[in-house]
Image (cartoon, rainbow, N blue to C red):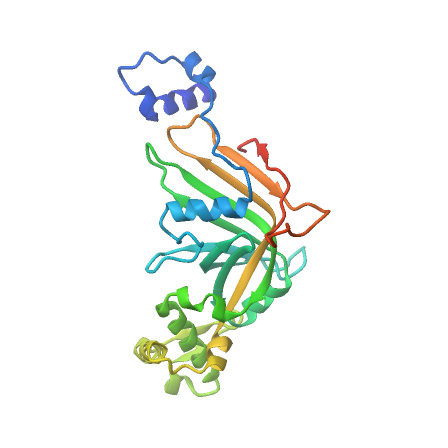
Length: 277
């Protein structure tokens, strides 16, 4: 049996529409029309926001819902080709999606400085690959612009912010001995190793209490947490599920003639329907 035929037979066995008891044949599977693609009219950032709201990750304004795990992966290449280091990959906390871009926070430091000056790639996934449901994947390339922390800090998880503050405080104590502070620098860039977890947990609890009481100075907060707005230059959306014959994949590009529309949102060309692979 050919590989292609085995793949089709496997798909027929898994599809809810083609279970035992149906009269579907391989020829009917191959000729079955693809399901209608989702509506992709308008600003793709609004589509991303609306899909996130459907998954109850954000509100109607695109702001993060309390208690939700809402993240994206960002990758930045900080060196040249050849034997250079691989790109830096980070999972960061999304705070808001708007027609202006994707807002997120990360710990302030060397990595955030690299993201501020270099082009980045990002990836967002959501949904469920189960009968009756779909999954979505968003990929994009573009640049980040620094954002005032006050614009997104209210929706940021306090536990995350407290750990960022505690990490910044720990780094400032790196001149002390390991016996005193419980960690030391290692050769893996500027990362610190915890040798006494209980001490660091106390620092996090202290930072969390200070946050709750409004006792963290604004200068220390901004030195610990950095907010960015990712502005895509190319955006790609792919969606599908076990009930669909094909994955639908769309691409948007920014027009060379203008950067924003009249309402200030990012300008986009009409989407193109791409092959899934």
